[in-house]
Image 1 (spheres, rainbow, N blue to C red):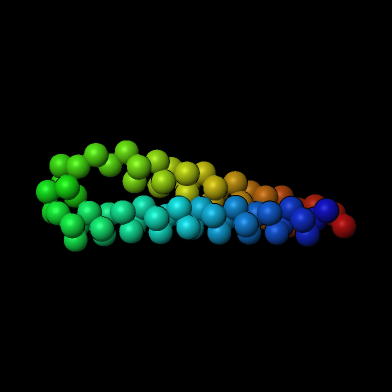
Image 2: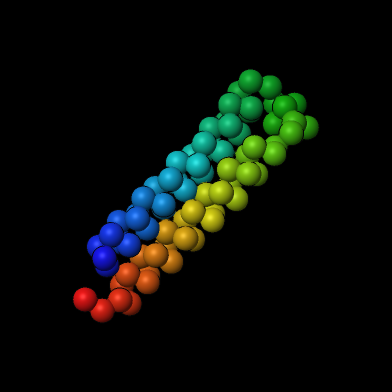
Length: 72
């Protein structure tokens, strides 16, 4: 059980990292495509991806921390 919780924490953190890189690629793509889009564009998807990544990383870290505190 302890190992399953730890692995699921790593998986959640990996998904959060992918979301963070997705937001980064959106910003880089907007900068390459049109600088005005980066300055004045709608950044709802970027902000949503960053918030999702933060939540998933925090949840994954919490699961890993809890699995470290569990007794065998």
